[in-house]
Length: 159
Image 1 (cartoon, rainbow, N blue to C red):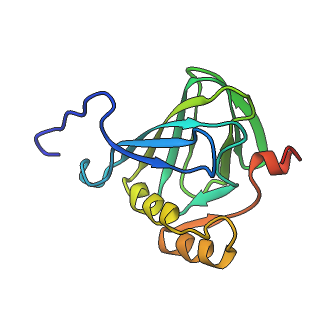
Image 2 (tube, one colour):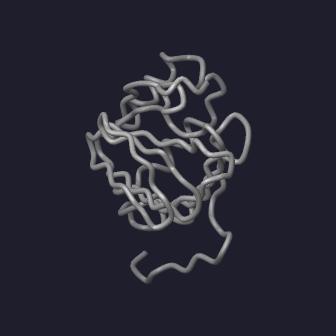
Image 3 (cartoon, rainbow, N blue to C red):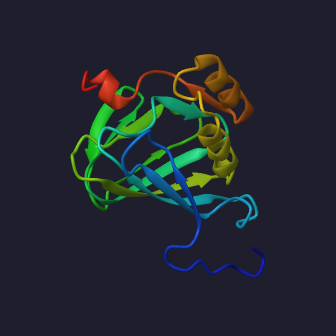
């Protein structure tokens, strides 16, 4: 990236995260293109979708809401983010997010340093990722993360 990079609208690496619905991530830039400095992701979070409570040991996680409402958890605190709102979970901070509204929520997610894309490739390629806690824990260890609790919809008794 010494000479810079241009990424056109819609370009990037697409990845579907949720078991159903439009929970989709578009990695516009990864650590490969940014010299390891950051990953830039545009995501659509479907109804009741989002990761369980977790933390990253080596990455800061920043989320900006573009459209819709996103329920976020930082530590024990739950709050709603609306378009233009953002949250930052520095490394070591427990966090989660979910879309509790019927309409999809669009977000921008910036991970620093840029180590997130390889972790997500591993997670989506693991067929048993939702049902095998041991396999999930091995991936967490490999990518310097930690699962800490349920998803926000599970925590609130919505699923």
